[in-house]
Length: 321
Image 1: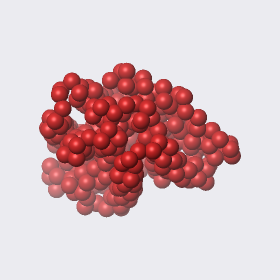
Image 2 (image 1 turned 90 degrees about the horizontal axis):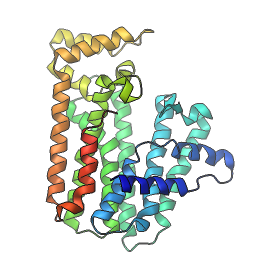
Image 3 (image 1 turned 180 degrees about the vertical axis):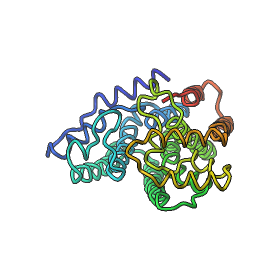
Image 4 (image 1 turned 90 degrees about the vertical axis):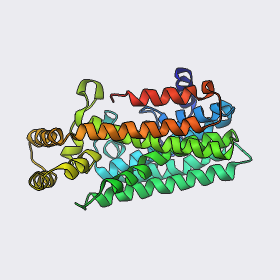
């Protein structure tokens, strides 16, 4: 896995992202060099390797999938009015809102351009998968925005939202990597489902870490979802378990924006603790990881071929940030 991660990093280090007009491309270069986990290109290349592909064949697809992912982050930051991304000012704060919109639009187009740079006999299927994935990510973002205005969101609706907003891009990256290697159709479906369950577990972990993460390891202030009144899996799970009195209190808290948010965060965590919310979310995470493992087990390959994906899953299962 470390060797693969180094390959992914080298690909991005070698790629040029600044062209003319400089004002359009500088924010793109800034965004793509902020780093991050590079999980999506890592999964794409791991799936390709697993089915006997080669790294050069998927070099530009890896850049394309990460360019698209970062486009979504750039626009999400603008929509959410987030001041920081990975500890640095977001594009709309460092430049302005119009720049964030235009540079983001360009990144979406660049993602397709990267896929088109390398001919492949299954390119139509690859681009079809990427396009469907891109649409679903946008659908997930719209559901997320809808949920901000609703107080009757269910756990099933939330799970579907994060499937679209987060999981399909991980699954799509894996499927695209497998398509480049011309893997058997049934294995492509298994690896896609592996990605869906991995993505759901990944997002539920984010929800959990935001509330209960170790600040020193997590790298940012915890409780931000509570401050932002985000209806995460924890909030919905607590609502489901709470008495009517506590339910009303929790809803009222999530309508408030006090100047000093610490008492708010403290009280919400007390409610979560009383309802065993943390344990319920951990149970849901483990269930998704188990489902991901079953999908990986279904793939008709020797275990050593699956080792990189197995290592990635184990790393994500134990992550603290």
